[in-house]
Structures are given as C-alpha cells and as structure tokens.
Length: 158
Length: 68
Figure 1 (cartoon, each protein chain N blue to C red):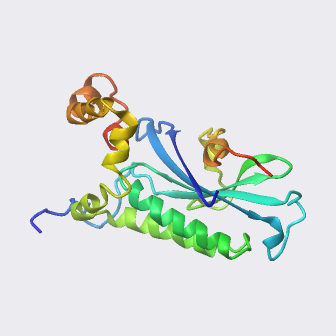
Figure 2: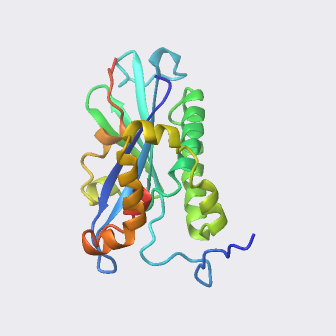
C-alpha cells in the first residue's frame, strides 16, 4: 500500500449563530518502515509506522483537487523520514485557510468539478442506479427541501 | 470568461458561519492505537475532536489493514 484515502463525515454541532451541519473529511494514509526514521522515538515499538493526514472542510465540492494536493503533501512529509518536522503540514493548512478566506471564484470551482471523477468507474460501480443518482442530483433542491432540510451539502456529496 | 465571480463580502472576510478547513495528523500509536496526534488551524491547547465529540475520527481516518 503506497497510499490509501478515506472519506467520512463529521457533525458540526449547533451554535448560537448556526444550526448543526455536516463537515467532510478526507484522509491520506501512508506507512513506512520504522527503521527508515532518522530519529526513532521510543514509543515506536513495531516495525512499521502508519499515519494519516486529514483535512476537514465544510464542503466536499473541491475534494477532487484536494485529494491530489493531500497526496503530494503526505508523500513529502513521509519522505522527510522525520515526523516531528511538520512545517509542510502547517503551511498546507494555512494555504487552505487562506483560499477559504479569499473565496473561490466560480471559474475555479467549475474547473475542479470533475477532477478525479471517472464516468466510466461511476457507471461500472452503480450500473443502472447511475441514472437514479443523476436524477437525485437533478431533483436535489426539491428532495433537500422536503426531506433533508439540515443537509445543505448533500448535492455536492453525491 | 463570462462567468461572474462568486460574490464575497466587501472586505473579503468570511461569513460568520464559514468553516475554515482544519488539518490533523492521525497516528496509529503502537501502544494506544489510532489517535489524533496534532491539529493545524486551531488555537494552542484546543482539541476539536474533544469539543465536538468526534470520538470516531481516528478510526475513520486511518484506513483498515494490517498494522504490522
């Protein structure tokens, strides 16, 4: 296993200002031979070290692009063979935060939309149900309004 | 391009309920198992996993597989 990705959701509890919402997580897991570490900590007692770098965001809309960036960042961090040096991770979060504050333009959002989404794989995985998914996407505003009011990100998740 | 940019607030500040993306490291600790090792993007000493009760986060983040 070179790298492995996991996708999950988390609940962001309600605050005085906002109702509870979903947050979206993506993680990239890698492992390496503990013998390759430049400084092996005392609590590394097994032969393999396994870690995941996780990003938690309020929308899964840009996850195609994010997945590629997360892959590069995680790979670079492991390549250092020194996990206490987290500069690259700190700067990764800062750039994500910065992009969020500036806000994406429409153009950027659309450019990202299909990255990592293979139509071929979609059809192979879901067969005839692909049409149901498509229909759900088209119906989204109605479905959301009537059945799932607290899930504003459902469409993006599909 | 004719597509207008997404309107943002005047000063470029995010809306009040916007969520700034967080980065975390989840470690498969050899004695304690999966755990969040550190956070990036949160104030010193704060732990979103504890505050928001994200107890399953370490297990969801680390992929299954043999832990040698």
